[in-house]
Image 1 (cartoon, rainbow, N blue to C red):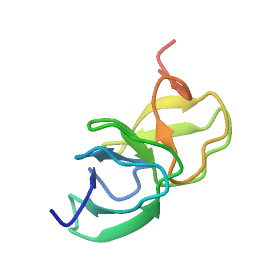
Image 2 (image 1 turned 180 degrees about the vertical axis):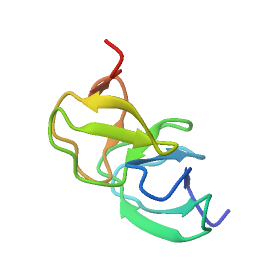
Image 3 (image 1 turned 120 degrees about the horizontal axis):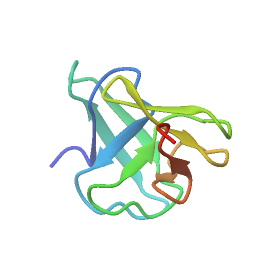
Amino acid sequence: MAHQFLIHRTGDHVGVAVVDIGRGQTVAGVFMDTDRSIEVVSLSDVPLGHKIALAVLDAGAPVIEYGTQIGLTLVPVQTGEHVHTHNIKTARW
């Protein structure tokens, strides 16, 4: 497999791990809408199915996936960090 995560749309802030990603790994992702590839260095372990940050996001910033807002950051998030319930919350409540 050439990539370790998928990005649903250009402009998304996160990609979804298709394998377990280890801290410190340089990992490749592919945008599903354009087939463009990117690389990031993972700052933390990211389990299969979880999200990896593709952009620096300030605390309280919207998190975009599928081209829509899926949540808000609770703390600043760096490119390559694991994105999950410990650092984002739903934007619904």
